[in-house]
Length: 507
Image 1 (cartoon, rainbow, N blue to C red):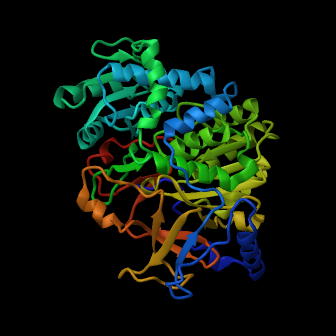
Image 2 (spheres, one colour):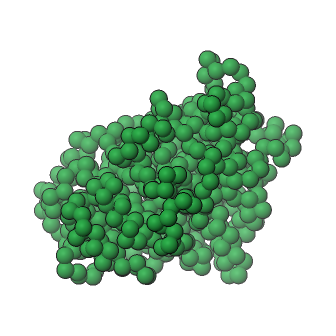
Image 3 (cartoon, rainbow, N blue to C red):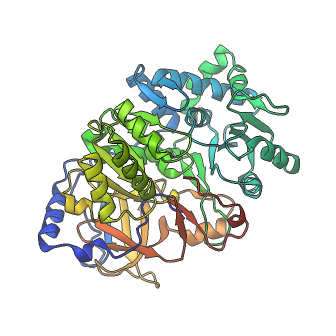
């Protein structure tokens, strides 16, 4: 269900010194990237856990496809992707051209805007390029966990009516093509299987063949159709681990994707000025697709794909060779990466920041990352798939004692409140359930109006997280309302019977 840093443990605020609290309040009011001083609803009694965070960067009405095109015009010859394990480098201009060829080819196959198209596989360059093509054609990209087995892929296809899936033929022990063929024989909604490697299989298209289907006029028409796609249309479905035992399918709009990325980049200011970022986290996850891929289009970043699945040695080598200025990861990844760096002592002079989400990062781990990689900023991120991606995060330039407590500040243009079991606001500093409202809330759970109505109430999204909110806009998680198991930053429901026998840790 959730994607970034849902932290479990004692709330960091109970351990702060008085001096640290003063620094926090001053910093929250004076953050140069942050905006406007946070405000409260005048109708809410003083002292209760409600906060609205305005911002200096306005929200925009734009589609993901338009954002991609703007990026290609602004940075045409800059590298957007470096896939280390594939030996491929690609510029913004080249990526847009290939994405539009894919979009035109998929339309030529008979797919229609609004159709759900699955992306299933590890972190290859093709995952990112196909996503770009899907949103440019007006399709809804369905992000699928690479470790899903037959039962899970059957569920995904039938749940949201997937008409086509793009995947490699095989990766490690995952025989994607055989499973997809099996699914297609059972469910008529899945019409096309498209393989992004060079393997030729009867009954499937190769991605390169699909790219060649559209003629010049049809490819140019992709650019012309961008104005016909509404920012309020769905662009992505993220499958989550739900408390009912079956994954739910949050539907997210172009507008929420674009603005969450823009606001994330805006908060980190100069740190996101033409960065080179080591990805590490999987594309299928909200961390990878929004914080990883989407922010690239807003910042002119070069995204370094170090390996198809996380490999700490590959991470260290990629950061050193590609002179990465930033890197993403879950706490488990950072533990492994710090151990690998201590063993190799690779040059890390280029690295300025590290970002972590998916689970709680302990103060000792944060200090270890800061010392091992000599980074000036450690970013802690919190969010949910249902909130597009990031809802709270740290602020750049914080004193180290604040970075190490994983204190997080509400994102701009969002409202947050903390309530008790009866839905009443609790006082600041008191645990309760975090509820969030704003541009980034999901549209719905696909095909599940009952669960949607229980989760979304007049625009307020119930996160299911125990949270402590403070008057200065900072907060931290202290647990879950309902028990979940966190593995590699992924939420696993202990009651999901059909997935546990086949469960494999992705990282």
